[in-house]
Length: 77
Image (tube, rainbow, N blue to C red):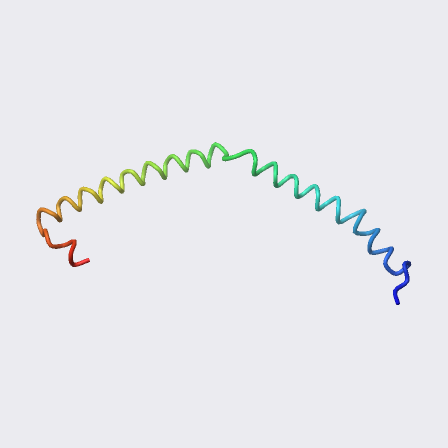
């Protein structure tokens, strides 16, 4: 079958080059995820939440106007 000498070079290359790079990249990405949102991302999130609140207020206003002008509009949808 296979000789141990055939398998040793790929195993050595994997253990010396691939495995350490894999571990370094893995733990670097874990560290970035655990740090949470950056200042820029937090600012964007707050801005989007504010826009969503304004949009919800507009929808409520439009629904109130439609209720006054065309009370049957909800049944058509």
